[in-house]
Image (cartoon, rainbow, N blue to C red; front, side, top):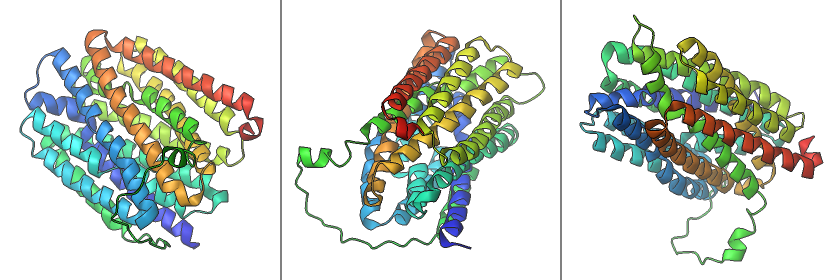
Length: 397
């Protein structure tokens, strides 16, 4: 087997176990917070939003630093660091005794993890350029494969054995991801690490990555739209849950179906993207995501919530790899660690803002306001992609 395909197989498996670990327990934190003493509808919604936002800003600060270190020391060490750090911090979350303690571990998770960006950077660095669309789509599918299996099994496990023990199994899954990454081979000439503080020149530092800042801005906007409703899905399920089945199990099913839809989107769009027409594809994905998310404002049953969320996340999952491919094609191989680090930072900021905004909107304006705001952001992203396609017809295919 060609070396890059072998590495991609191991990276796909490591990414799946990584996301199983994070999605096995974290989607059910709104229920765990109630177990830790948070009560009242508004307080639960606010704490849920705060928890979802907690890792975002630290991750935004740390990701470019880890990305720059990846360009100097190698991408594989960064992937190993992210998986091992995640394993430790998820175990600590299972030991939390107060909501504040849980939030502290969430913030530390943002500092020391970042498995998605680290593994994606390693995959892109080791894949021939003509196959990078396939590699990015495949790695994106791994993220959502983990996000499908994790909540499906995690919700059932939490209903049977409790939320605290779920975090211990989450930690074990991240440890398995770490062990799989040991088999990845990276051809990298390590540069000496200079301990002196570098001189900073704003013009010189700005110029290398100025061309791909518009793509990073689109990544941030798409992430804000796609993550705005994440804190409220478990609480919405809690309000409309069917009798006779655990609430965590039902929330896990909703997340799993949505994750499966994004797995299919990642594989399909990744293949289509290699044929060209990136911007047209991105515009269609963002617009359809907005339409489906907007209709969720009227969903008051599980039978409406499941297909509409799956359709919205399918479209969202198609748009994200397109922007990653655009970014990879606009930056040289020697700076891709920094570029994907900045993109990861942008995602983290949008994730943090989405958590806070989603929590506040749901607490004071209700669930429909969250869905309608997210839909408007998706449509704004579609409009910007359409304008970019009109200006750059060659890139649009």
